[in-house]
Image (cartoon, rainbow, N blue to C red; front, top):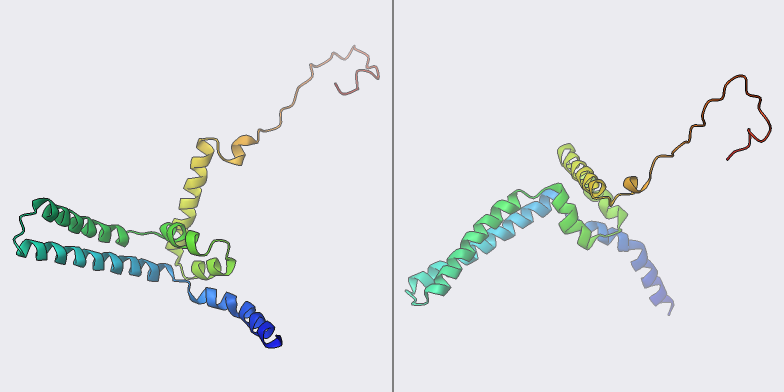
Amino acid sequence: MRTQIFVLLLFALFLPHFAEAKVLSFRAWKARRVSEARSIEKQKLREYKKLKAAKTSDVDKLEMLKARSEQAKINIEIAKELTSTDYFVLYFGRQFKGEKSAYVKAIRSLNHAEIADLVLSLQSKFDQQLEVGGGTAMKLSPPTYEIAPLRSKATTHHSEDLQPE
């Protein structure tokens, strides 16, 4: 029983270190996405060429494979254009939600330009929320003050005049 508790305690102590070990940097994540897109493109192209070489009479299937191959080429270009914002939305938002140490590690792996892109993206998102009234700044209104009319010097002030309305 004690050994089981000891093992559980060790596991709990070292679990954050295991979580940190699985964090991919932005560049590694992006390289993986590009590599996967290239692999899929090669596979789709092979399937298309194989079916074309077989001189199939199924023109619809041949066209479908050709279209998938072309889409795979487009996906490679999309993967090459992934940003640090995409990294946090697509990768971190799903795998490391709420794990502060993982975010710290990921942010440290970014260069200054990537951090700037991320901050600009966040600023743009906040601005969009404010434009549609979704942000808290739009819900807060500045305080309003009523200005009392000026009284002439000839008017005497009574204690009731000085009471707030």
